[in-house]
Length: 216
Image 1 (cartoon, rainbow, N blue to C red):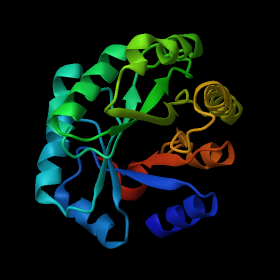
Image 2: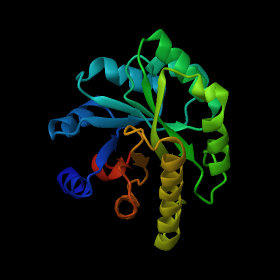
Image 3: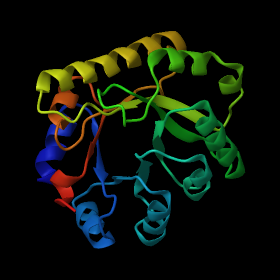
């Protein structure tokens, strides 16, 4: 299955984040041996344990909601943090990046779904954040794009519309704040149930777990 997914993802010029959260290291190694190198976790301590035990060329992506007091666990090695939804979190990532003498790649998370339970900024909040003196003072974070989760729904038109909304936000932020910045290029959207629609709508990072690892 992973070969088929990778083939389609590659056709779109995107990358696969294999969502390995809660799965054992033996399963991760099976997927690693098929050539996959980007893995996604949503618990900092679990990511830390796996990072210590698994091959060093794995790129670990933090894809879940991240509390500020947990940033320190992953700051030394995390390749990308997908779900940045506040200036406060960004400032803590910057602090930990400084301590570890590295710049940490981040994505701004947007609330595009109908479910209230999902986290994320709206576009006006993001504009306010990116325009602020506090944000512009940060030196150890790099905003590389946007992330969002569509409504959990069988209505493909709704899901497509929400992905299109996120792509529109990306385009407007790119033009206004990142026009000269080649690093701002990622749109993290699409999971096991809707990744093909996400690719059609411009996703550059799809986060797929159960299709690769099976259900937990």
